[in-house]
Length: 62
Image 1 (cartoon, rainbow, N blue to C red):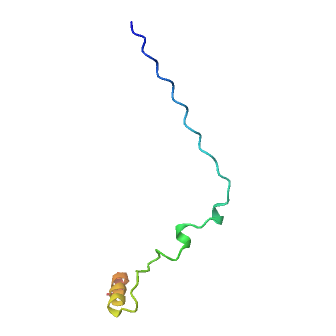
Image 2: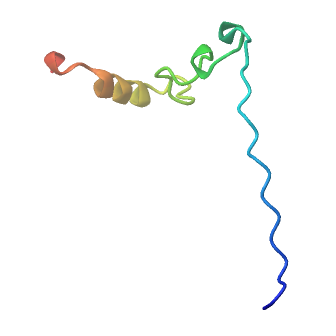
Image 3: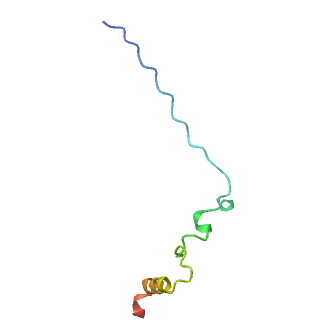
């Protein structure tokens, strides 16, 4: 019979913490001006603006 050491039990996982802050006080990714259809830096390029217009045109405007 061997006397191998018995591994110590693992500590319990920490319980989730409830946060009672107002979520409307924090800025979300929707509050920023980026990501709402803007395309990076066309700088008045008419070809890029035409491409955007054609890409975003509804199908009944063909």
